[in-house]
Length: 297
Image 1 (cartoon, rainbow, N blue to C red):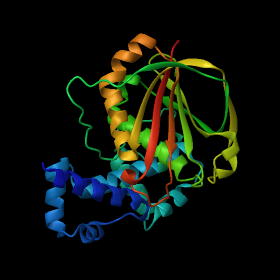
Image 2: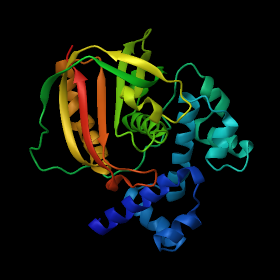
Image 3: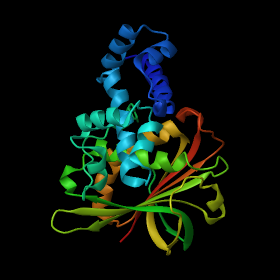
């Protein structure tokens, strides 16, 4: 695989993700790629290992599935927003992917995330012996505003990494696209709780600083959160949003398994500070100061 192949796929994925809610078809994707439909599908499968049509369909349905669980939008509104020609078509395709209807998926006691499809990303490549700088710091008392969701899962063993990444990214995307472009700092806070037996529950908060309350344009119920002063392990990375996504993947697979055993943190927080952006910005065009924190308990 050449650097040209990587750049081509990254640009194609960017276009698909930006236009996901218009439900792009293969003819449209082939036209913007400059390849014939046949050649494009072969190239995409060779490089990513995924059929292009399967990827697009799975990403659309993943966005729908997360919207069903974290928003109060009606099923028909979600179907319309994602370009389905009818609710019947949406229900049929959703059931093929997740094995149940949208209505039952929304109301199930435990969220089954195993068939969520994450955005495709190439793995970050760092030199041999690379290890990010890890700092210890104390955050002061903080007031934030945003929305909270309780996430309930049947068993921690059923939470595949790729499905969790898809869930996390879609929740972030849903919050991010509902912000005014003047809002440049976002907080994502994740706190797991012990459930009954093998059950796993957690609370997820998406928030901004109080002065940006007016910049939350979505129809989520907005609450105020108080975070008491606390000590954290902190890891920072600066670069494009694309690079920071890859860095997070590296953290979760190579750094955090060992670090979590040492600190046993009960709260994880991400602070995403961006420069100028707009809804049409590609990930490589958005500069980000990214900080991952895990509490020291």
